[in-house]
Image 1 (spheres, rainbow, N blue to C red):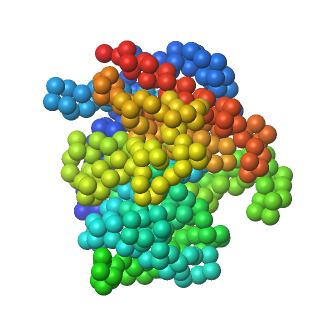
Image 2: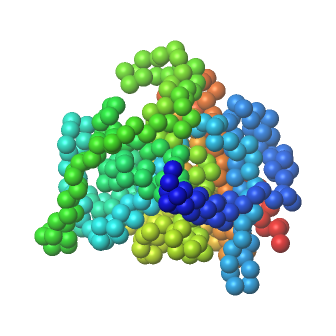
Image 3: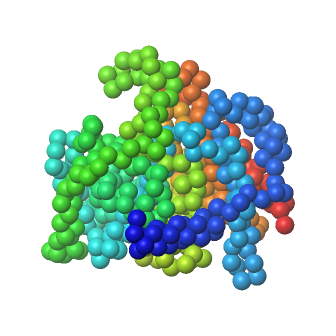
Length: 404
């Protein structure tokens, strides 16, 4: 390594350390998870079987000074990036952010009409979006659908817009080298088809101006940072046959709880970071994303969602996840991203109640798969995972109400 490379590398590391100092300082004393996790039976049950449920928690206290500047105290419980969980829809958060950055880089609006073409059999061509106001697809519309109801089809189109190399290069620049985003959730792609993305075109509002993005194939294999990852004792394959061996997650997406918590915190508190450490997006796009991560599906007009299917707590696991009743407390605002798949359930949230002067972040993951068979649809989401996450949220919220 020459002197110039050494200095450049040192600057990158120094910048990252400064960012981590802001986002993830050392855990502080004065709060105990043990007292929280012994208050209710569901909390005691999970806490007594930590290895079985693969529990991890991050709780961030937020205190503001007289000028409104926030400071953070972080508390973690069995946080371990090597304790694998499948991140599922959590990847929609960084993909949404990077997509808004890329539209700015291309000098187009996030609501510019976007046409997706197909370059192989597993890809799909998309020229219309009946959920949008004008009937056409756009990055903003796809992000809206992901943020409101965790739409998998919308994620696929944004994943393709970004491209695998672009995604990982930008994540590495931001300090998230260990995130892996290497497959869609739709389309039936296999193997390297997953890392070949579609040709994309953008049109102006008069359907005249055109920006064309070539199809991209990843130039390298993005290996899983944990090596080979096996979960369970058996799984149901794509032919609906039981295979009596663990399911291999090695070639699937990966994102740790620490990274998810950090990205959401960085998005929400961007204006308190130095310019060079913020996500490089338009401020109106940042607010657009935060607003739709906060909204209930029923509050959307384009698309519109049935409250019977997409009830208020559809993706608000903390505090409300164990009930499908309408949420009537308009003072509590939850800005969050969730994941649910293969028995894993995770929520990463910024929770606030300005009226009560409450403001904190909470992230947690739990694994509920009693029979240890992956993909059989028999998971204890409703009997263990959601009751646990909802009660955990309520207990931390109650603690915050009393905290000075």
